[in-house]
Image (cartoon, rainbow, N blue to C red; front, side, top):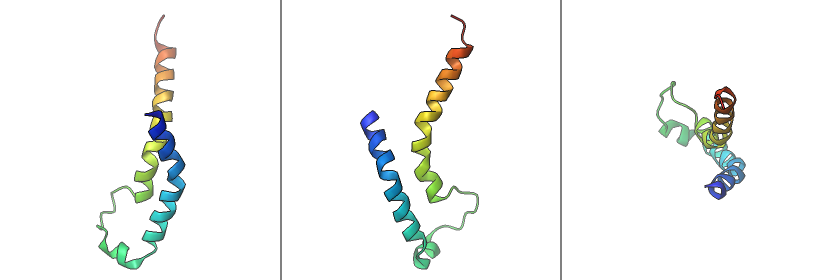
Amino acid sequence: MERDYSMYCAAYPGAKAVAEKLLSDTAVLEALPRDTTALTIDSHLILPVQRVPRYQLMLSSMLRRTPN
């Protein structure tokens, strides 16, 4: 799991660059759904990067609030 997470985090900048390049193409933009409430592609790409630190913060908070 840790290896996969590290690989994803390392690949994130490249994936973001590819997404930005694709989204600069009007043909690609026209093919995408027009749902304005949906997350952007960039938002979807960053979610896994943010998830592990968020879990770590949550567990630390739970430990602080749990009696010994």
